Image 1 (cartoon, each protein chain N blue to C red):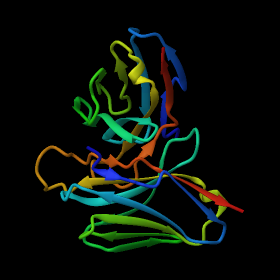
Image 2: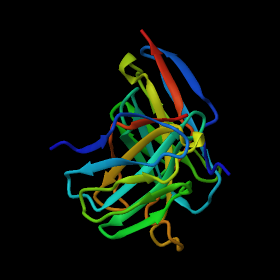
Image 3: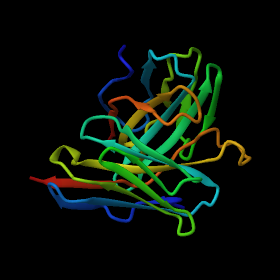
Image 4: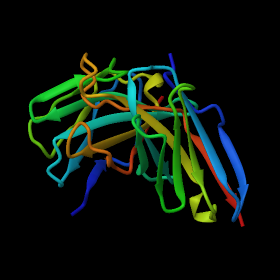
Length: 118
Length: 113
C-alpha cells in the first residue's frame, strides 16, 4: 500500500521555465511533508518542508504548496536551471502526538526524475 | 567532519551469504535509519534507531538485522542474502526524530546473484 505517491516518473522542462512536481498521500495522519533531491551516485539531500498548518512555504526558487483537503502537495521550481536535474522525492511523517510508534519515521514517494534542458 | 559514511560502495554476494553494511556518522546524531532504494519503489525504511541501544523496524525489515551499540555506528546485517535484496542501500542520520534535515550517506550498491 503506497501511502505517498508520485505518479509522474519523469518530467522534462526547458531552462528558465517552471517545474512542477506533484505528490499525493492517502494517510490522513501525515501532518508534515518534506522534499528531497538526489543526484546520481549520491545520497538524497533535504530541500524544503511544509507543516500541515500552512499551505505554502517558500525558499528561494523553491516553493511547496499543500492542499490538505485533496491530500496533495506540489513543488514548484522557478526558474528551472540545468543543475536542478535530479530525482525528487517527497516524504511524509506523522505528528509526534498522533499516537502509535511512528517516532519520526518518513514515508517516501517513488520519486520523479526532473530533466532541465539548456 | 565526514558526515555519514558507508562501506562498502559496491558488493556482490551469492545467495545465502551473509554480510554487514557499515554506517558511521560523526555529527553526534541520535536518530539513524537504513533505507533501500529500488526502481519504482522510492526509498523504503528498513530499520531505524532513536539512540544507542534502541532500534525498531521500518516498512521492510525482513532479512535484515541492526544494532546500535554506539551513537556513531549503525551497521546493517544481511543474514542470508537473497536476490530480492539486490538494491541500493542508504544510511541516514539526523539530530532527532522530528528534525527536517536528514543527512544521507553515499549509498551501497548490493547485487545478490
